[in-house]
Length: 413
Image (cartoon, helix red, strand yellow):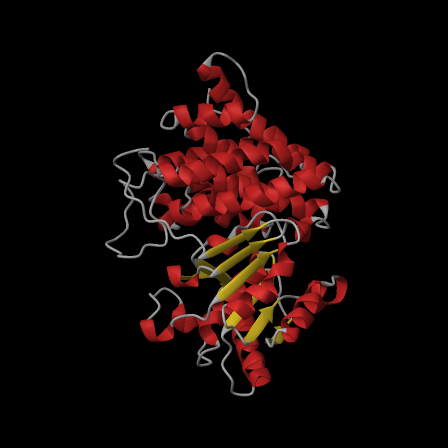
């Protein structure tokens, strides 16, 4: 316990986690009085898995009607959301759904969150970007069923979409967007291919580590918001983060190398959600801030851009988060009795793991040119909500050094 913590913690209203737990959902929704829903997913899950039909048939038997939207895509856009709104409202023929279900990865969950807002009145999603959600526009209840072990969208307050007019990411952010039910069935992840497993798993690890090391709750700038989405790390978020890190250290590489290792798959499903419970309240900082800029330049996946930056950000935090980094080092099996050496070894261990999962370990190998580094640094610093949470002095200088070291593959002496 830290007596100076100022905790503002907003988990999902209900968490259901366990193998086969998807089969509980129809009866739970009927018990809660839901009768008309929308299931947001994509063609893969409709055509290549039994899960959509399995749910729709079981729900129908209990008097729950479901409209399926199967047009989910990676990196959903505001345009896709608005088109989906029109399509689903037409299928509903004037009726208002009383719940929305998301089945898929973070992209499908983000799209479903946005639809929870737009389906009420058919308004475009841009009406909700960058502003608190008015009480009259409260979102529909969301049930999130993630099929990857990584994004943690089932426990977070935001929906991230791409605005195709300028190719930038926009966020709709409000605690009201947190799912009412987070249902994590590890069996959904059993057939994830190695590349998806690695990207998602490294995203989960980044969420856990970054939120474990971020700015403290008693220093976090909430800008006077009475219901902040993110509010800094606390003893509560750190409990979840530490368990998530331990699970990733044990199970991430196993789930990538041996996709049929069900214990590893289950371990990563737990790790992903525990990491989400941590970062979903504590927030993130430099890894994600720089990774967003790297993704904008290279168009590489979110998990990969996080992974290439994580070791170098850890290295930059040695002077301000030594004790926490030592704890993380021990979780990764670094047993050097000299604490300083163990902390110095941690970034190297994490970088080795990234390489073992088939992801480049430097920005140079990622395709970033040296002449792009200044613009990359400026773009990363522009994500101010993340720079403000990075617990160092002279953030601009530290970002510049992190990015240079990540390009060259160097660690601080």
